[in-house]
Length: 448
Image (cartoon, rainbow, N blue to C red; front, side, top):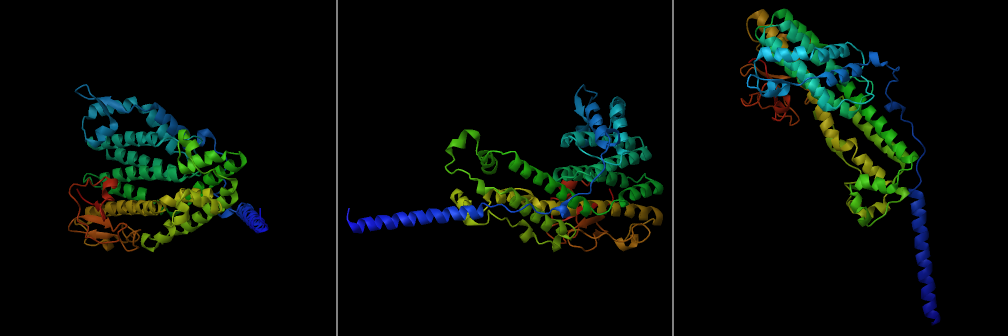
């Protein structure tokens, strides 16, 4: 080997060694986690332990377990209470028999609604909550059929109380918030249906208005749910760090590769790709950015910033090889696939919750106005201050709720922020919020 060749080999070896040293130094630097951060601003109030007999969950669980959710119609067909509601069946005798068979479940439900707190040792499923609400809705419908409007109002109040307990749980999460949102919609649907019944007295309408006027904006509810969600995620990250979960399991979760395909993954995962303390801080900062936005009108929220992701927007990280040059890659992916992907939906749902409640208040107030004056209001301003302290603001654009006296509707502009006049679609059921919010404007019918 010539001296020149040897010199080239030495230079090549030195270059390779320097490259590896630089790579090792780079990995060492990006692989160092930060010190634990302070998350006290995201902490929820510390609650005293609640005994099972003081916890609404105890009784709601018993009610769900005792529930008989079907009856046999005159043709011998087994009909669920949900189908009874959808088809507006009117066989009062058969349905009344179902309620007598469900007296135990109803008693448990009433006991639960008398509690102050709903704390979840083992969360009820969404189906169990809906089954409880279905029983109460059917009971309220039956009460209306037999003109027992006081009973119907009491059942609607229980529906509403059930939803409030879930929404105001001292152990909130996003999932629980969404369950409570669905339950509150069911309750408000039934209250609106009752308010449109011309047989209700002025006193009964006042009772309904007082029921829905005692609830403030859902801003704090959603903010607490976000804090609860952060606490849950932070705990899971700590478990991943302290319980020594295998890195290939993290890869399985983040890259959604099946166990059978695990051996075909071409790139291994290293420890510097997941830094627990940095991940907690990134997710905390995301929540700190979202929480103040909750209190704003939808039009004022910076949706582009709130929905901007940290990893997926960078082309290099879309390739698996790119993760080797990214500090805390898996932690950033965890941040992206956490609440960030649902931010806009979460903000929109908060506005919908407030809009549904405000629309219900306006509908009841309009009926009260008509009963006492003999005419329908020409503007919503006529309802102030006798029936409403002020015309509610549309949570989407911050302007007063719109009213179309000719169509007999009150409406929100929705997330498109366009006022299209409040003309209802005749095919949209007036008490189906899921259908109402699919239109560009959310239009609520005041009168039948």
